[in-house]
Length: 339
Length: 297
Image (cartoon, rainbow over all chains, first blue to last red; front, side, top):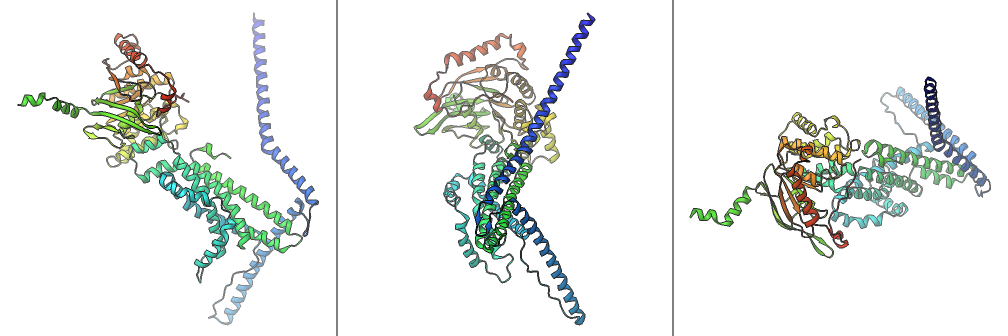
């Protein structure tokens, strides 16, 4: 009897041990597959891409030399950074000289008021990135300030929606390049000031970006607002919520997921439009950098443009991720904030 | 002279009309459709006293929800009207609070905040902040949701969501509480539990309630009167059944009660013999709103 029992318990122990090891195997398998999906496969993909790129680059001969492979681009990255550092040092040196000169003149003549001039060196790659980021953010914000209230209004008011929708549908597919000449001319005609707060080129880029990134936000916001669950609207009616409270407590939170979808789309559009606008209108920024290098036509130019392309792509990706992060923070509906 | 005035039927009718707390008077409802008007309701007439619990029962698509929505003010009757304490109803308002079938809680607010939105709107002028907090917590305790009042709707079960929905409606201190199949989306056990809770609350507050239901047992268990509606189109009040069972009621004792079983079989007879639903494709397409039953999560 005792023997029997002990044998029984032994087998159960064995069984449970077996299941534990099985579980460990299962868990480690799932961890392994996550690592594969998140780390290994992207690395393999990028490696293959780099390989194909360097192979095919070697066989493309342009008037500016062989098409740059990954190596050449990496080299240009470091040289672009070095140029930036050198330029900064020059600027610092310039300001030091200026200060010294002013001090020397003041010693001779105590009444002398030193002139301070800004350094007017060439804008480096890093400067251009910062300019572009600033412009795209401003343009996007202007668009959002117009588009979201307009979208909410259109979503609430069917008649207004019918009136405005055709205009939105027609302007939505317009390329920034078509807007640009008009915007440039209008800005130079209307924005006349002896002491301008911002430069004309900045304003032109900003308005072009706004004009193009307006529409996805308007459309998504109005759809989000007009498709709110009728039960929630009935709750608002039963409570007799005043219009403002209704918008604040019901409409806005309910349509936040759709508004954010529109904002992400718009930000993507804004970034693409900005590069084109800068290229064409010679507005400072990454687009101008690309255009300048193209006009420059040195043997390094193509590699430098390729470096800019990678940076543009990378920044676009980061901007999208930033918007997603913001959405996760603001929206109650976490499931809508997935990739 | 005097007696002749009193006996005048018109005068008598006027008098009874004035006495009714809630008077649903000769309502017609016609919905516009591409092929002309669809008459959902025809001559629905019902007088309800204060503190009465009324069940509306009938087959799907017979216009029960339409009646409720008209009382709520969400729909406008094509003909006839609603008088609540002799005032005409023509827009929604918190004095006729609605418990919707799909709880209709705002998913971005916690249970507490959902009730708070209603309380703030209704009592902003009459209550201090502290009183509001007390009142919100009182109502959530009433529906046994005090333990989870800071959870959001997606964190609680279907039955709990419906409890919060009821708490929100009760917190408006309505003159009439309108419930549109409040437990229709719940499983049988949760439903029984909710019915007991509702009876308990009703014992305490003695509200005037109109509840739509599909469930015969629920109707008999909860109501003072069961209003049975004929099938649409042109649905109207078919029969009204007085439920004179003593309160408080217990489902276990009632199960063997002769009167309970008689009432139950009367409702069943009405639904399945007199108003047997003949499914036809054409009538299905004109039904304005058919709510599918969902299981609770």
